[in-house]
Image (cartoon, rainbow, N blue to C red; front, side, top):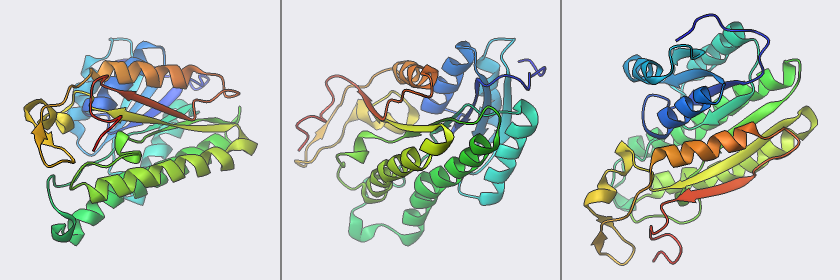
Length: 257
């Protein structure tokens, strides 16, 4: 991992939740495509593991940050500005499902707040930090890609907090896309279904369906998602993928319920 980072490049990215799963796959794919990448996440150890998987000449830094804490987000984007001098992309990926299988009437307030603070408030804070950098920098502009979910369209049973936040991410994406137009800031959303990560491990053993049955669901490789994000990121700012859905082909989404 190279520490000799150029301040002139505009192919610089922040990936939140970069210590595992989709975030790790996207960070490595962006790096492989020539992007300088800031890896953000709550735990330094997994971030270092992601960095160790990159090519020896990868331009990459690790910045431990809890996206639900404004001071951590401020420190993240300060580090990006000081290290790279420019921000071309934010992949707003950090998120949590919360406790699984809990009916709405039994969901604890603290668990609701944790999901909302991470998935929605964290996404807003990071988008705000990226927006401020992208508006002020020269050349002006950049791209934000929000990680929505199939749950931004269709819920699973007992997922009220996760589903509510992912529906809200769609509104965040649309507002950022509109408000960013005068400053060449594009914003799109990728809605992901059943990528093979720790979060979806239960799909392999069986998960509750809308009809009350438990069924094993197919999954796809996280690398397939990463390739889509790289494609979205590589577009000129005059073009934007507003919404993309990438899912395991045979998962029960079309016709779910």
